[in-house]
Length: 100
Ligand code: SF4
Ligand code: SF4
Image (cartoon, rainbow, N blue to C red; front, side):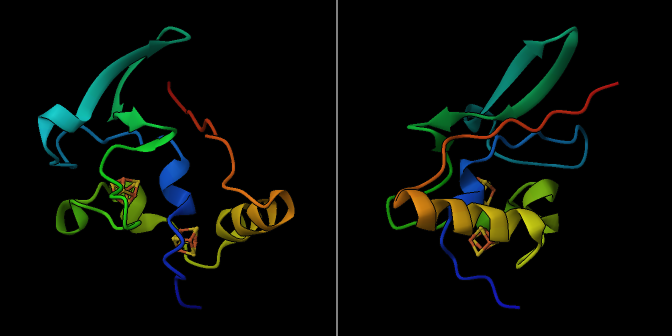
């Protein structure tokens, strides 16, 4: 299935993998939550700061691994599209955090 390029997945928080993801430092922030410390993409207006007004990724060639691995047409992709269609709007930011 092809990605529709709707940009909805860019409304998820994006955790970075240290030593793997190389993105502009000014686009990142360190977050402390629930005893965990991790680096993530900064958010702006509810979406990743790298998402342009045109709905494109401004760092596409060096986008984080979680973005590269996001499955087009996968369960989360389809869920977000369905939610947006039902609500007639983009879904709110969703939190997905695993730390250990
Ligand atoms: S939510 Fe799915 S269709 Fe939309 S940009 Fe992301 S991967 Fe592509
Ligand atoms: S880095 Fe690019 S692909 Fe990943 S969430 Fe941000 S704008 Fe979307």
